[in-house]
View: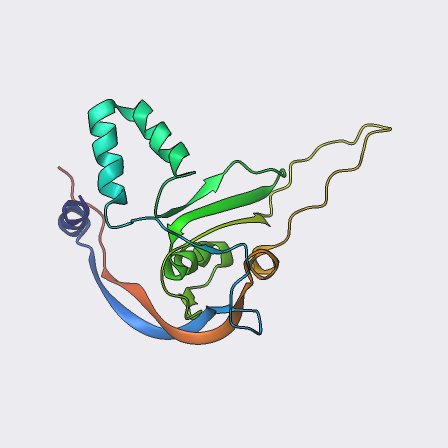
Length: 190
């Protein structure tokens, strides 16, 4: 599908692009603990990710979309992925990883931090973990007289990484691949 969209944009809008690497501010995902190990909340995964996607597709094809729920529950979520789970605190985000690499975590953190995140943990293999952090959206609710005050908001993504996963983001510079638009035009009428 992506090649067809590229062709459509090039034909219809005369879009010409190229990619290049530029030295920019980034975050390096590193282990925060002095012993070089992540938090006990990060556990090694036994997921077989080489066939997880195929197993999910085959289960759905054979038994229909309802059977996928059983597979997801058995693995406590989508195998070999990072996905959101229902948040326990309003305004928070809870993410769960089942068989995800540290490179996948770095990729997930990129939009949450506003900078490219590169994995420099040195942790290889696949891991399971769960992290809850403040997504910065707090519902406005009026407190009733005599009611209990709202719960403490969850930590920021930076604090959650360190407290819950034993990892941290260090500000640094690095090469980032960016897309450069060389030319574009309004579409021609049909």
